Length: 94
Image 1 (spheres, rainbow, N blue to C red):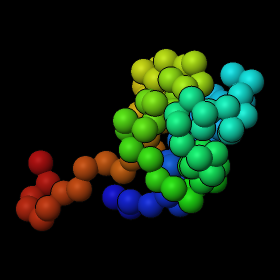
Image 2: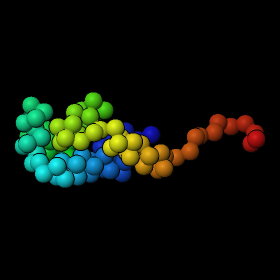
Image 3: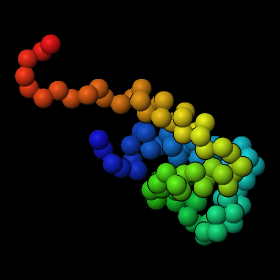
Image 4: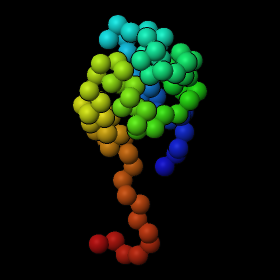
């Protein structure tokens, strides 16, 4: 598993964050004010210059007035479809 902000999966996450913010009619500064962080934090997250964890993801969406659960479910479904299958380790095929 590649841990990078430059993967297709992470791009999808960033696009979801930006779309949620813009659909809520909020600027990066608006979201930053709710989160009590510099506006550059929001810009860096959306541009892929800063990685966020699950807690920050939930706070970001909540700051946009969105429920993080459906968004997370949508992402998890997309990630599951694009994930490689389990790796086999030697041995005979069943």
